[in-house]
Amino acid sequence: TKSLKETLQEVIPAKQEQLKKLKTEHGQAVVGEVKVENIIGGMRGLKAMLWDASVLDPNEGIRFHGLSIPECQKVLPSAPGGKEIIAESMLWLLLTGQVPTPEQTKQLSKELAEKGDLPAYVEKLIDSFPTTLHPMTQLGMGVAALNHDSSFQAAYEKGMKKSEYWTHTLDDCIDLIARLPALAARIYRNVYKPGTPLPAINKDLDLVGNYSNMLGYGDNQSITEYLRLYIALHGDHEGGNASAHTAHLVGSTLSDPYLSYSAALFALAGPLHGLANQEVLRWQLAMQQEIGSDVSEENIKSYLWKTLKSGQVVPGYGHGVLRNPDPRFIALQEFCNTRPELKNSPIIQLVNKTSEVAPDVLKEHGKTKNPYPNVDATSGCVLYHYGFTEFKYYTVIFGVSRALGALTQLVWARALGLPLERPKSYSMDALEKLVKQ
Ligand code: CMX
Image (cartoon, rainbow, N blue to C red):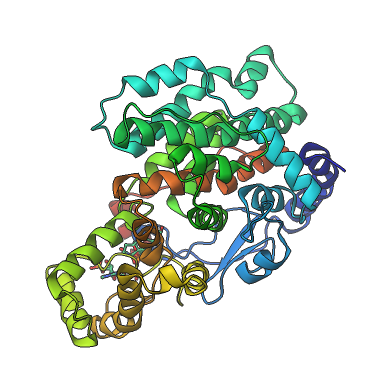
């Protein structure tokens, strides 16, 4: 069986050729226009980034190398004894465009487990943080500090050839992904379970199996499987979302993968992005408290209006690109539907009911372009059901996951020799002058 690196070595030349052809033969082709509203509106709608591993269709949602979520669930190998997609098989697909064999997936699990221990100085750094420091701040700082051992940085200092960039980038990306569970679990232990021992990495377990074990949920197969699915599904959401885009931008300066991904994590920490799942839970719990056990359509409706009238957004609804219910939301709902304990859980039932009522209310409110639930509408609530109630930690799990897609693109950016990202900006005066012409 071919390793991940060998597989990449095989697929890269054709992609390099494809890009060269696009550039030389179609470099001047026009693919869109730029309106003033795009410039003012956070570049929404501008198609201006190269991102090969996933494409987000506004109506269908995400596809990973052309495969929809249900297709991925059918073909991507799961963990021994499990059913859900695992991080390794999703990473393999994102990086190579190919579906790995179970053997290749197992081999990658083994490699990640072998590389998973944190260096002692990072353990010390994390242990020195006050437990009141937000877990996302701790994660971002821990990831940045791991660049002490960056293979890319060391080779760059020695003066490596451009054609070698991607192999060192890949080595760093694999090391980083391998170490994320130990780093993220240490933060969880320090903040929420101080003094409890952290289990060692089990060399026979997959990445998320180990993560779940280190979080203290190793005996709970159901939550471990949920975490596997959650982490695979959140891995990539094309290029323009704030975390992925940040990793790409910072990486384009030839910052190493640790620094690039650390920056991405701080973008993920914002309430309009990754923090939304924590916000959803807070909001659904407040709704639960206010309406009590009478989860009628009327009660949910009036709570939604109360939120909107107070000038807040309804968390978990709307999207920068999607214009339909998020298929990741649907996949997580289906996970819940197959498990009676989740199906009957009051918080999950409330999420379900809210998702039936909210779209009409948001349509009537008339602002959002997408009145349907995104993945955050349910993801944190499922964790809450399982007794994983420390919701300030939820975005850290998202952060472990998003590494799969963001780091994949760093490898490809180096393999394709993509340049420094440097869009042009306008001042308001310059724009005014331009439109008056
Ligand atoms: N509730 C109330 N109003 C909403 C709304 C919601 N859920 N979603 C959008 N709107 C409002 C916007 O605030 C905006 O209002 P203003 O014109 O007053 O500024 C208007 O509708 C138009 O926004 P849009 O073009 O539909 O949405 P954007 O692309 O600007 O923003 C997003 C997308 C996700 C930030 C927004 O829908 C939102 O704030 N949702 C709630 C938070 C959330 O769930 N975030 C998670 C997104 C997924 C992720 O990245 O992880």
